[in-house]
Image (cartoon, rainbow, N blue to C red; front, side, top):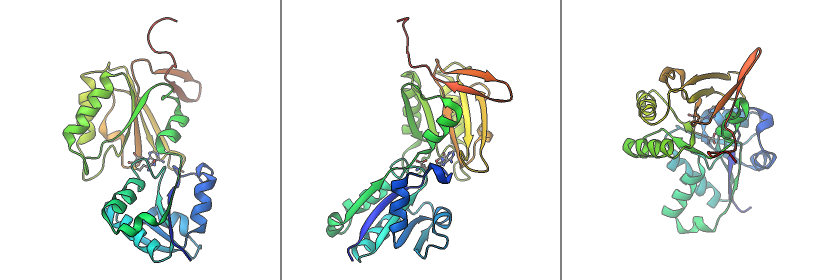
Length: 253
Ligand code: SAH
């Protein structure tokens, strides 16, 4: 048997938001590598070998996957959402580039998933109906100064924004500082949405404004969305308002 690595995005949570191609590759795997809570969710009763590790050990996890594949195992490297969006895909390629040259000859495939930004945007309406950008607020692997610069550049350029990894026990103050920085450049009326655990039973959504947003409204499972000056709300009876950003920017045409 020849080994291979399948990098799999599980989607945001709901079973029917998992892409069939990713689900198919996952079912074929002999070994699963990833963050334990995700693996437990997918491996139950499958007989697949689980290689769990802590959330912060991504590079070791990626090396392990490549080693197992080199030994002939069929390895699924699992991320939530999409593996290429703050997930395991880049870690696998980092490990490949730095590691055993034979790893470059392995069969590797990346199977896309529905990333949190897409699931959250769909839940709210169309907040990213126009140009937007996606940032991770985690300063584990990049300096905080770089994050602030990117936030400011995005705000000044008129991008709507989605923040992954907005807050954690180890990073309690960053989101507050990020919001304060945005207030220098954007009107307080810009919509801000805290979308937690989208498509899961614990889903919880809060819609506020940049002036009203508080860091306590986010946790580790929250995607934070910040509109631009054009982002609008359509109120509804008995339901959250729709949030959308029109397709047209500037001018009157
Ligand atoms: N690869 C994943 C992102 C992993 S980073 C993806 O493509 O979605 C982890 C961050 O993703 C969390 O801190 C949170 O900001 C976001 N996230 C993941 N699943 C989510 C969900 N169901 N609802 C809201 N945010 C989610």
